[in-house]
Image 1 (cartoon, rainbow, N blue to C red):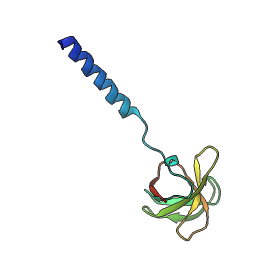
Image 2: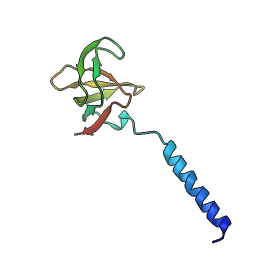
Image 3: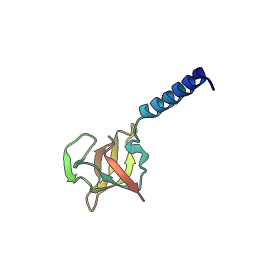
Image 4: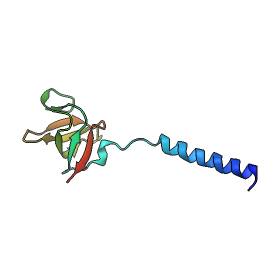
Length: 98
């Protein structure tokens, strides 16, 4: 392979790396109804989507998913032993499991 071939291969490889780097991180809607996930920050559970606060789940605490709203911007469910409410679907859920 000559210098031109090496340059083309190197350029193609850099393009593939750049494309992977631009892919968005996995979002919370990778989680599914019925799963329990942890929250990565203190999270207010609200009465309605964007409404007043019912209680707070501390960072690392669990949240069981019941369902998502139609736009998948809010998640309905509950913290351990707490009543159901809404949290934002903004990437704060991790370690989701059955």
